[in-house]
Length: 599
Image (cartoon, rainbow, N blue to C red):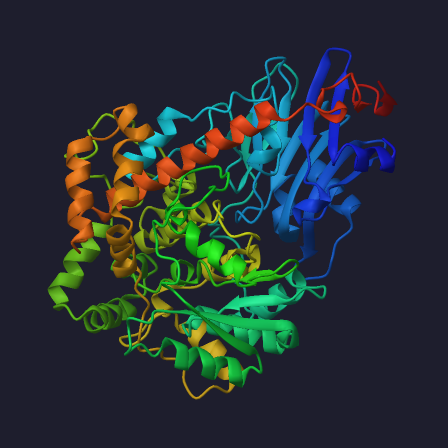
């Protein structure tokens, strides 16, 4: 395919043989704000690569080297490289396709099995919902799981006939054969060497690689340890001059020290500092149009806040949003009681008693409570999702329970049977990767804590060394403290958004009631309308009971509304020549012979 043809077709590529269309890749347009896909072909393979990959030290890597590695062993890609990427490779010798993506969820891959047996692959939902590709209907099974349990099956989405390639998995397929899923990256490898690099050195390398260019960086700086470490790493990478720190503060909490600490960190790192009121746009405020996303999420209750940030120029036209999402979960801001079992299974008996004392002081509970909690956690997180069932008075039972966690097969391994704290850490990592799938901001944020080097650094640490009686995340705290020169890192206040959500329900009571009680969930008998109406009324009076159910149902309704709006828009949009389909105006690659030919 000629380069000009790729540009004209907005980054699409079709592979076919004598039997018909085999696969279609729908890449992002340059107007989407992402790098366009890179296409290539040689005597062994044809490929499409989107995103960026780096060596272990952060140096850029050649696309041909990545493809060569994937053809030899797809697991070796994550061992040698990292980045935000998706790869589709056709192996001419084996006559099969391979899809890989970033194992930490920074770049998603969606796919759809067409009626003719071809696989349609895209990086966003929008790239798969053009006229005639998918029905554009909600997946009732997934949405019922979300309303009832707060999550669904790892490979499913809220769209019928659209699936998600689970992060950490690879998919292989041949025409007229079922898709074959294989593990491409594992969060647990007990034979792997522990990363001896200091945390701040790894974070600096990650940010230097991910934030190259000259775009303005908008750092969400709360004053907490995670965002503070990002600011320190920006200063070490010499990126602070094009960085603006933004602190979301709550004007109703006059005693909060969040702004003062964030300003002190920004001044120390020589970063421009701005503040933005958290309650400028309350949660549950009506918006004109909801964004098209893959699954419902709590972020859909805060759309007005995201729109307000965009209107204030954050992150701006070409700006990058940077946040510390995932740091709390990865480095265990709340140390698990099961760490006693982990230490005992590693024959670290002296640390068992010291850890029990530290946990008792940390949580301010008696020592026998620590031992009882450790015993109860010994059999948890064995692959089943950690769900929070909704109240049966509001959400009737009957929805199928999600069968497994994102990394459930890993947590069921024998080597993790006596390590409940490690299983908890892997489950928490899976949860934040799932949560990162939905982004409602006008530009997808850069999340350094969800990059492979940081995730592997956290998973490679001894959990019993990550906390003391007074502080958690010790590896992060000590590393940042030593590198920054800050007088302290011990933030004494923690942000709380529960009261802002209750205030949003109070102010927008009529809108929330109409959306939830008279919406898609009620029409499909997923909720009890009368009980839900009473719950919303109590929340408007300031009672937090039922806030979980309300946010799930409201998020589901906003998801369905965006789905229907998107489907209606695609029906009204005329089908261009570039969208007619294979064999019309698109160029094709004859994968059976390894040559490209115009149709």
